[in-house]
Amino acid sequence: AMNIRAGVPNDAKVLAELISSFQPMLTLDPSGAGAEQYLASVSVDAEREYLASPRYSYLVAELECQVVGVIAIRDGTHLFHLFVAAGHQRRGIARALWERAQEESLRYSGRTTFTVNASLNAVPVYQHLGFLPAGAAVHTHGIAFIPMRFELRNDV
Image (tube, rainbow, N blue to C red; front, side, top):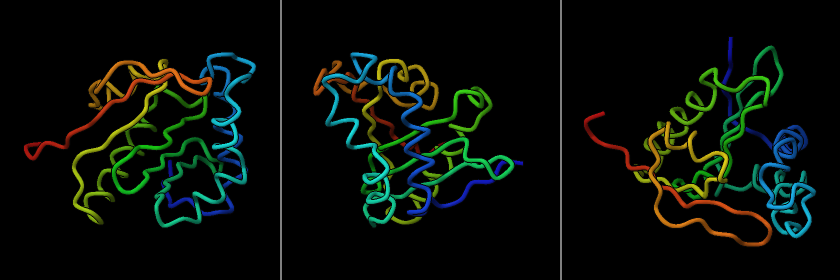
């Protein structure tokens, strides 16, 4: 059975490895050239800092004690990371992480609006989770994304 738990600084290495497995899809140049700032922002050291910071709330999904997914929310409103290991996609793990993260944000901050900078290949996933585009595609520092936002409706 899948277990969802809070992320801890000790998770930094496995989470950085999970994220780096997607790097060719996330950077405009598959080699990562030109995206050094982005790559530094998802390094082991950077992840360890986020995991230790009260500004970031991490949830990690595990199957058989193996990390298969992660979600991170910054400042209670910005979806900062949502990654599910390639072999485990399309099984509801992203949705389970997102629903738990929403519940926690609601409980702690009462926030009902979330933003995400969706990489172009992830836009359909976020649309499926209820996010709507909030602007044109942005190309910066070797990456491209579409800003999206999610409004929690009271009648859900």
